[in-house]
Amino acid sequence: MRVKLPFAGLEVEFADRERALQQVLEWSERGTRFPIVVFGPEGCGKTAWLKQSAELLRERGYHVVYVNPLQREFLAHTDVREVAGRFAEILAKASGRVEVELAYAAFNAARELVRLRRKNVAVLVDDAFQVLGSEKEAAFYVKSLLGLIEYPPESYEKIVAVAATSEGLSRREIGRHLWAEILPMWNMPRKGFEELYKQVPGPKPDFEEVWRLTGGNPRVLAQLYEAKWQPEKVVETLAEKKRLTLFAGSLSPEEREWLRQAVEDPDTLFARERIPLMEKLIELNLIVDSVPRRESWLWIDEPPPEKEPDLGIGRRVAWQSPLHREAVRRALKELA
Ligand SMILES: Nc1ncnc2c1ncn2[C@@H]1O[C@H](COP(=O)(O)OP(=O)(O)O)[C@@H](O)[C@H]1O
Ligand SMILES: [Mg+2]
Image (cartoon, rainbow, N blue to C red; front, side, top):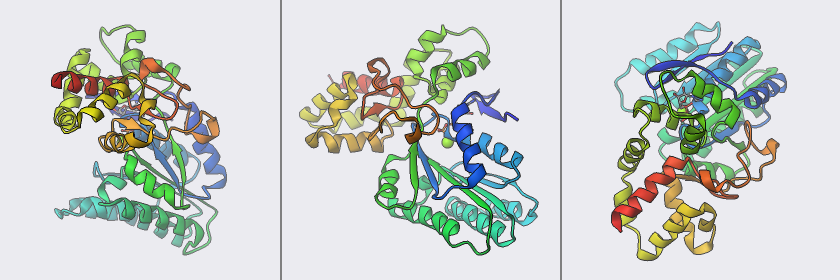
């Protein structure tokens, strides 16, 4: 069953991601040996995919908990009523640590389900690292998921543990340890994205044009729709939110030149002296670094193209979407 998803004030049906769902199906058959940590551009569809995965795992007889601490959201597909009750209790509290508590509640719920001898348990954690305060804590969170797989309180048949994030810095910290399998996910592939595009109502630009602007990023598509298809507006909002003029203004003339080159070709950032600039762009969630080889087993869903200058995709470094890149271009222009 395809889940319904919020989309710019509308409701759409989950589209495509065939391969990513196939991967979840494979995990459901044998469990995940390590927690799977999925990272990808903001708005590329991680949450949508996790929600569809929760449904798929439920259909396969799994007890499933899905938690998004950042959005204060949870789903519990299980006959153990206390699990949902516990989440609701945390959400009802006014405490400022609700987000952190929710992140740990997901882990505790999964542990509890194993303890109660539910054979197949899935724990899907969305946007947890952002609320955990530090990259170190994010890594420890992943380690505790691994602990559940390796040292369960009761014997179980299968555990599926997945955590998704768009946060590039914690990903690195997690990668330093061998506690997880880290897999990137990219924006939607062209054909699947077209399915989603078709669900957007009203008059709209040609698909070709929308693809060029979004690079297959569904959130950028939603923002374009809300902005009545005026890309300048989406670019301006992005630049405002990320305070890009201030950012560009804080750079040295040399760094600004590097940034200009990165707008033309993100791979130029992959040089020793430019790494600090690259880190800032990762922190601002503008680019993704260390983009792996385009072997399908290294990716969730379909890998992006090898190099696609029009969309800002380099071999090793890529702009999260063409409009993310555009927002930087605009900030540079403003300073000139
Ligand atoms: N495969 C998909 N089918 C339909 N809608 C999608 C799909 N992927 C993402 N969306 C929608 O696009 C928007 C951004 O996706 P989201 O999952 O929130 O991205 P992320 O979690 O990676 O930031 C949301 O409105 C979401 O419902
Ligand atoms: Mg999300």
